[in-house]
Image 1: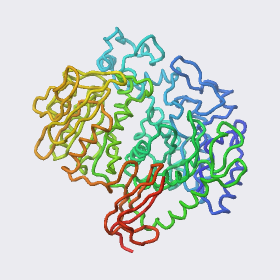
Image 2: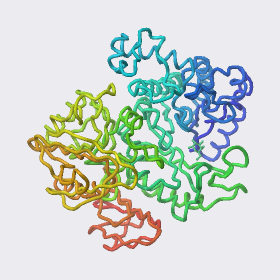
Image 3: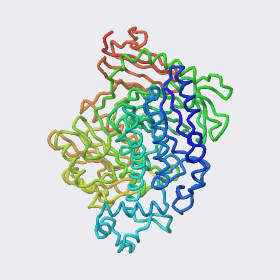
Image 4: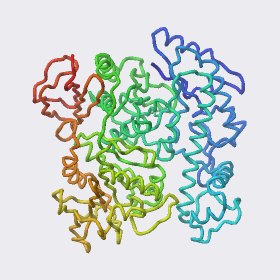
Length: 637
Ligand code: GLA
């Protein structure tokens, strides 16, 4: 299939009200001649010049109230009633034209909501809508002032019209105020997408509706919310300097968890991108690595981007399946081979899903709250939260232990997981704490880290950290120490796990009440004081990790915890070799990926069969650099 149309508004409607479908009809027909189906993107990420010229008020504004000008993409405010009107008209017109066209199998809303940091607009329409949103949320100014702690820095509001947007100001805004603005902004995109879905749904019968989430998009827009009315979810998988295989694996896991359903990759790069600081080409074998990495976590569709390298426009340096001379590239050759392999695998993969015994929790509001006040701002990376999440993720990934990354809300069913990890889940209401406590009471093992529950859902501190959790965790934090890059402490396990790991950058000095200290600090004035505690409640365990740490610490913890909980790995492999499986009615399909530039050896389980040749595989398997092998274990035929 081919996805088209997502930036083509100016061609669909060259001047206001004059619709031209001839070229699109032609394109769909040519594709149909080659037996290719179409996913149509609504074109709203690129408002045409006639629209922004006639209605400059649709353009978004930044924190300084400066206009984000036309001439690029994503230059619109989702709350603009004018833009919403035009959106409704173009989407409805497309749906009327192609809604029951059998060649169009699905629809994509817009393109990468939130991309280029466009998730928040500070225009006057947003200001009015924000005030209305607040009225709806709080009902009264007293309630709002109370929730925001407006008394601090003399910001008690006595009229709804006094409430500002958190525009550029001399110092920090009230974080509860900003947090609500972030929630409002995210809701605005959810509602804007819903407007498109409503226009489509009644005219496209059972065709699917998806949205292509951008790599880290959801920094500003709550991906779980956006995903709710979609099926399948899809995302754009771009790898660039600094993006590790474990980060991409974690994003795959988030995409599955958005609906607890398999999903698609709507854009899979085939070599270099155009927009990163450095843009290396894909080395031979890299397309396969990226494509096959997505199958075990639940990708059911892979669409390459781009078909042909562009000779015009902003992405001239972007790779394609065809090059600028319209000749097939290395990526094309790899993609063809992948396609042939996939055809053979389909019967084995039919109905299969990613299975996991460990869940990580993340919540967007928590993430915003965390990044709003990171309390440790490493200038190299303003995404403090991502580092906190990747500590445990990376350690699980290295161990080939599959995870799900469910939303941290009490609707998420945790009962099937042997362990649940809540890294830096900054906001936790008393209801949320009760939900986690119920999981532990029913025998679950909960690992929460520093900063989890530090604030309640309003963004206020309910008590000594960890907020509403001390009763469950049996511990409180006496002090928290935030050190600059390069300053590390060490944490040594004294019970359960063994060994010592360097940790940075955020340390809590713990006061274990009902909990036992299982690891202590080794350095500084709190040497010997608890860094990790554990409390057993019946069959359940509540483990508190008082540091924000990288994977070193989690490696020690998991080497103890995973066998204790009987959590299995897909296979044990050495560094940089990923082994993940998808399990379905036909059995288990195991994907072995060598992310290294050097060959690697893997010891397979007895009875492993090569999924393609159906031959038994030798116990010692040699994988070349960036090699992928696919096998089955315990599958008939
Ligand atoms: C995004 C967009 C595409 C294109 C690619 C380039 O994912 O959706 O339109 O800009 O990036 O890598």
